[in-house]
Length: 282
Image (cartoon, rainbow, N blue to C red):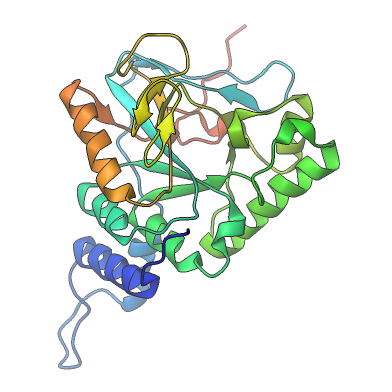
């Protein structure tokens, strides 16, 4: 059953909380000066900026030679960082919004936009807390089973919805189940996607994973257990997400890692914020 929380209260709390942290209060009618309400809202609603990695500490992914969106499943870095990504969006845990906002944890939400219906405010709260919203189709199909035009509808219509609702067009696409083919990459390019982002490890929060049990953690690359620098970790919006997320953050800290913002490790040409490499000199 889908979880339901009073999302209007969630949004109000998230926006007020972020606004309070963003700067001084608006001046009163008594004439005290202060930033305008529009200036405060611009700060609240602006995309979060996260620390960039130190030069030389990572190797940026390269553009695919065929001109289609690059497929990325890890970042080549020396830093003990992991990148947290959360898919779907059919559960709405207000405590999770508070954790992300108060602890300033960078995450990416890959949103299946069917779930926006009636709950769009929840993802406004997530966006304001610091989660960038990226593309995960409209209806969560197995993309590799669909013809090109159907794949384009899934990706483009999802991107259009996210743009209209949250003010930024997504540039990263995650295919449901990690299933994609060349047609998927062609459709993603036609819809403006710069990269297809997969994962190296999955936290089976709120469910059981093969061989790892309930709330288990599994690597998908055969590299043993635990985290590796540059891991992209997959989890899902499920009931109890706040507690599950705190559990994951504890594991990350125990192993000497920290969450980082993957968009700061991706060049702009691949949908991130990092500078593109200068052209080679002849």
